[in-house]
Image (cartoon, rainbow, N blue to C red; front, side):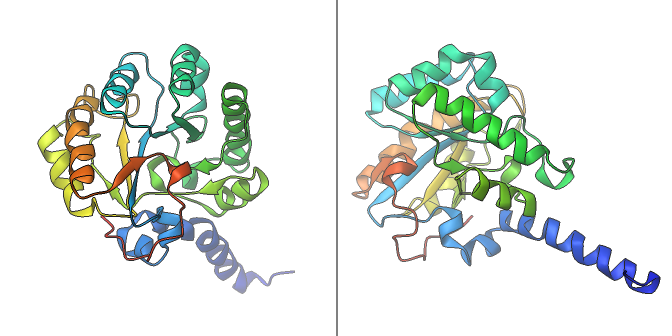
Length: 246
């Protein structure tokens, strides 16, 4: 039995174990964990989108990716995929990769015990029903992991992955120019880029900033001789590990 005087220390220790992985949303922490950040092949950039599918915006991204001849990884929310299956079917039909972002966009650090595990599994099962294969990747909402989330990824045979660079396209003030300004320094070989194909969890209409920046994102990479594609082609963990994090 824990002595009464030691109880606060024990509780503090448990809290640290729970919230400690959440520090990985910081660029300094991700720099020390390039595999978790998504650093991959030196000749490739992984293009990823979060929070959809959304019939009001995701089809515009699919149209633009088709025009650019580029495929990507879509980290879907289970509630959105269940609500808009026709968009999910189009994502798969057009050759894009589908991955798990959780059932709802909730922070793992403030979610009741067990919820992350069950909702991660529920979303993975739903994704599999669309793709025919078990998904590979899990990215937590807000990029915030918890101890439970890490254990749950093992249970559901998923690989946690964050990003090396974000366009910060979720704010009301975001523009294609501001998104590119954020992304440009980090668009090197091995980078994993995160954008959002919906405003479901962010400022109304902000997805237009990501959509407007998309041609230049792909163009800059290709001018540098880099291929752009989904995480399945990125060989996460194979690069030098010196990708710029931001």
